Structures are given as structure tokens and as C-alpha cells.
Image 1 (tube, rainbow over the protein chains, first blue to last red):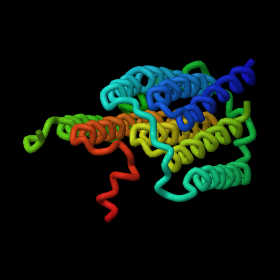
Image 2 (cartoon, one colour):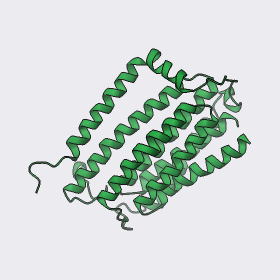
Image 3 (cartoon, rainbow over the protein chains, first blue to last red):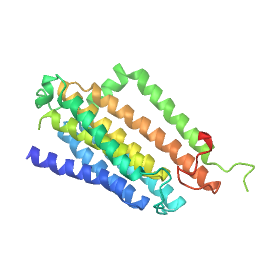
Image 4 (cartoon, rainbow over the protein chains, first blue to last red):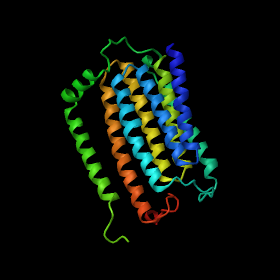
Length: 170
Length: 99
């Protein structure tokens, strides 16, 4: 059962990822990314991290993707021209991507981590639930937690400054 | 499923995202491909946290999500600013900084 779910979710994630880079209309790319994110949430659940999966669905598939849809609707989902400014870009880019994949696979499969081949240790029902993550965030990782909240505030202010209408603009 | 499968899947997704950044020229789609790569990193973090049996990797994944949200907000703000100035939304034509 677990294997079936894993392969279904992995196929969904991979199909979504390929859809993002292959579809010519940016609007469809955003929709493909939503499929990808939901499949990733299923994978997170299989890895018994319920809170991260919930945050993935709520924050990413909910909030961030709505932002993307708004911006794509605002700037217009025009398709890209087929003209290449770098010669051979469409040929070279997949080759470089495959080279990266081969390198990463060698690094992962050739590593001497014995535990990588196993299922991981047995964990209780409370592994990765909101209480455990919240305890870690507010006790052990309080400074990174506050730093990320300041980062969010800065990003919000920066977005307002960037997207607001400038004075010299007609 | 053994943890290896998850890590291999995450490297596959990372490679797909990197390929997308190399191929596509629309800044919106390049941001989407950045999301793909960040999510692949998240999957690896969560898989390793399961491998060790420790929840701290999941906190890392949450912080990565926060950073990704910030990056999206600033990137989309830039795209809106580019669009407002009626510049072309194509990273090959926006090359003034490169000289």
C-alpha cells in the first residue's frame, strides 16, 4: 500500500515538474506546479511529517500559488517566442540537466550512509505532528524562528516598495 | 519504501527544475522552476529527518518554505515593476546589468 502511494505521488510530482517546464502558457505552468505541490504533500505524509505536509498545502498550494495566478493574470500569460538568443540553448540545457542528475545520483547512491537503504527507525505517533514541531520551533529554534519572521516582514515591505507606482512614471 | 527512493526522487526533481531555469525565458516560469528546486531540497530534508528519526530536519523544511515565500514575493514584485515600465518580460532581453 505504501509503495503504491509512493509511486503514485512520485509520478504526480514528476509529471507536475515536467509540466511546469514544458507547458508554454505560464498559467498552465502554475496549475502544473499545484499538482506537483499536492503530490509532494502526500510524500511528506508518507515520511510521517504531518505538519510539514499541512503547511505545504496551506502555504504553498493555497497562498503562494494564488499570488502566482494573480500576477500571471495581471501581466498576461503570453507565450514565449521560439527564438533562441543563445545558439543551441534548447539542446545544451537538457544535456546539462541530465549531467546534474547523474552527478546527484552518484553522490546519493555512492554515499556510505548505511541508513539510506532502510526505512528509517520506528517512530511514535507523535513524530512530526504540530505539537512536536511547535515545541522545537519555540524552544530550540527560537532565534531562527524570529529571524524568519523578520525576513517575512522585510519581504512584504520590499514587495510594496517594488510594485508601487513610482513618481517619475507616466 | 526505503529512504533512498525519496532522495533519488528529490535529485530528479532538482534536475528538472534546473533544466527549466536553463530552458525557459519568461521570468514567471523561472520563478516557478526555482520553487521546484526549493521543494526538491525540502523533500530531501524531510527524507533525511525521517532517516535519522529526528524532527529537526522538518523545522529546516519549514524555514525553507518561509524563505521561498519571501523569494516569491520579491520576485513577483520585480515582475510587476518590469511590466509597469513596459519592458519585455524576457530574461534574454533584460540584459542591461550584464553590460
